[in-house]
Amino acid sequence: MQMNPIQLFDTVSSTYTYILAAPDSDAAVIIDPVDHHCERDLAHLARLGLRLEYVLETHVHADHVTSAGRLRQLTGAHAAVPSGCGVPPAEVQLRDGDVIRFGNGETIAVLHTPGHTAGSMSCVWRGNVFTGDTLLIDGCGRTDFQGGSAAALYDSITTKLFALPDATRVWPGHDYKGQAVSTIGWEKAHNARITGRSRDEFIVLMNGLNLPQPKLIDVAVPANRNLGLPHG
Ligand SMILES: N[C@@H](CCC(=O)N[C@@H](CS)C(=O)NCC(=O)O)C(=O)O
Ligand SMILES: [Fe+2]
Image 1 (cartoon, rainbow, N blue to C red):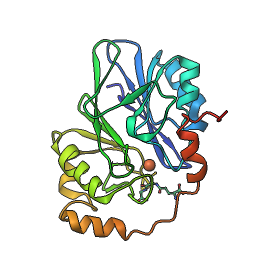
Image 2 (image 1 turned 180 degrees about the vertical axis):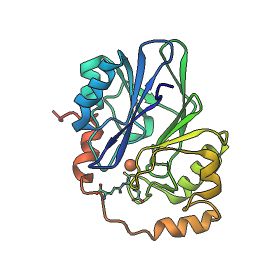
Image 3 (image 1 turned 90 degrees about the vertical axis):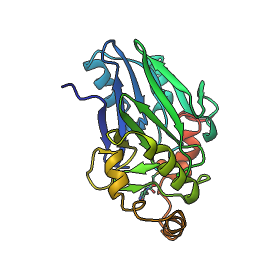
Image 4 (image 1 turned 60 degrees about the horizontal axis):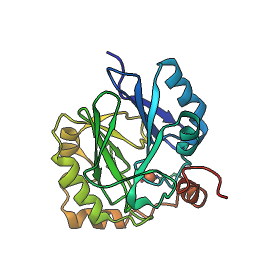
């Protein structure tokens, strides 16, 4: 079976980028592309004969710069970002419950899943959920910058993502341990941050992590609010 979604990795920031290829047309969507992999991603699309319709961002990233603006310029794709992320140049400002249509009747359902950042979104397509940094495999995104909230993250994961069918495949925005894909059922039963913790216990855990700031945060956040393009 053709690998779909196509999962691509950035070893610098441990970011996953995804290409979703419509099974019955040449249309494609890319999720969370990374600046220095623009040519790699264009080559993937070209080799597979795919035409990019949307560049989608799950949130404004703090640890790497997106290539969304450049991919949009080079392919004519539309840029779609969460409306709560403050990215004015994106023509599609996503809200909870929105549906992105591409190809021949393909639909991506958009869920607002705040917590890692205030605007963070997850996207559901054909039994797959792209969780950005809301739910990671056996983990979750941090909640200590960009309007993050441990309480909101707990609610997003347990009431929105865990409401998806157990067989739904979970494709995270990052992985720091060499893991690639999970399922909602597995995460419900085993997630090291969530499973067996009350909401209050989760909040205490997250608020006590004391992680160092991402090295690129002061560069990445302003750049990503302009789709990774230079300001001016
Ligand atoms: N050391 C990394 C930190 C990366 C980081 O903080 N990643 C965020 C996602 S943007 C996160 O939520 N990580 C989860 C964790 O470290 O528990 C860097 O400097 O970029
Ligand atoms: Fe993030």
